[in-house]
Length: 508
Image (tube, rainbow, N blue to C red):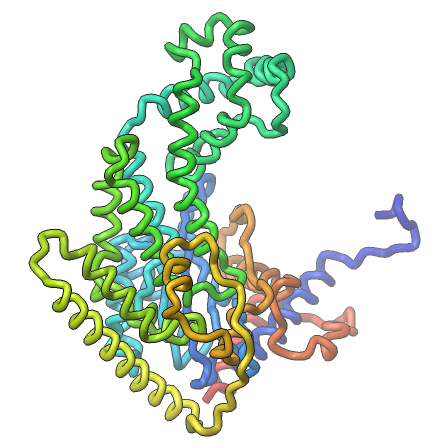
């Protein structure tokens, strides 16, 4: 910095530490007012992992909520070390987080589909009074995780062409010299692609997709490489050929749907929950279309079984999913009837139900969901001390239909969808600019005491709250100089503890 401008004087690390803690204290107090408000419905998401180098279990909790101006916000509210990944330890830390922030209206929570997390959810719902249907729909399962399970069920079947290419890529990436030789082979084969061979992570199926795509883009270089490296063919057994890449192309086209769905539902920067129903039905339609394809019929049955475990029966899907679909201005009761009819048809493999029975059950389910939504909305009005007549709805045009969703596209072109004038304030909310948080590499400094762990939590939360992508829930103009007095002594740990006590008192 001195080389760029010698007049710049950087603050000391003690000054920066005091500033960070003061800012954290100030921000936490303001955020506490929103999260402790009974009108604020909160959705919590958790992420747990074990540091590979430290062998320490960490858990981060993120709160998603909407302010009175109908803007979605997302804030990291907890970063803690947990003793184990057992249900009791997870539930205890989550309940501590909920109590420390004074949350009175935790509506839903998303965790991984591990059995220990299901057990933790069961413990938590018993401690949260007044939640919808006694917590039956409290756990919203992660759609991206379920898609991952579905695809992995298909990829567990070893495809000869794919295995051959995986071995070839693994061999080439095993040494710098082979990588250098392959890059030369790309030039000699006049490969125009700027991509290079991607590695593969065993636990991530999308890394397999990236491996296939990157290899396909440079397919002409493999034969040239075999001429420059005599050991290549001897080691892998066979040089990837034209027939291999023909099958690879088909496999990529089949997996492309799942990749796009994963990317879409993994988006944490804008609301996508209202699209949940149409996305899962589009996946079902995609599987059904390929179940008779000779190239994939050995994969699809297992994938369909895993799909049916989570999404095959509408009774296993949270009511909140259907509530969100009904509230989407692009959908209506007719669309929900189409959804339930399709689910019943897919489930009716043995043809025990007639077409009339399916239609009757679908209609009854729509009525049931509408009644539950009406009851849920009245509860919301009572909690918020509002009446439905006080809500003013603004009509505006509904746009941005999803062209990639075949299931929803067929419905939209059928003439059964609502007119484009049926938009509302909700539509503006659904089309808000992206916001979000990414914890980055996840690498954490070594900590040896509880006080330092709390200091880490302050740093993690402050980093999230300061990100430009996080919309402010207050006016930043009042934040000019968090510490004007350099001599002001602030003990970091005491300040954080004092804040928790102050927050609890102010929330009463």
